[in-house]
Length: 142
Image (cartoon, rainbow, N blue to C red):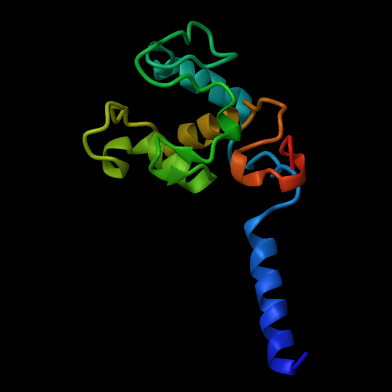
């Protein structure tokens, strides 16, 4: 194999391995966020009037999607990657992220948004994680 072919092979191998992560990504960490305060903030802002949110008192709404297993999701509202920065932006300014969305802007403070995000990242299914994180050999039949 020529040196050029070897370099191309190594580059392709590196790219392929970058597209598939081994196992499940660790729970997202939100700098400055405290999950226990987040559950209280979700209740205080009335998020449960639109969403089912496990562990949040009276969070039985059916207007928005249920937030069960939230940490396993790849995207928030189909608009932004489910990562702390994007989630915090969505919580604070959903109308800026997706103009016309049904989710209202509730004037959530930055501290409360961090806490809410930290809580949402505790909601995991215990399964293998988002589909893009599955190893091919972990899919039945492969």
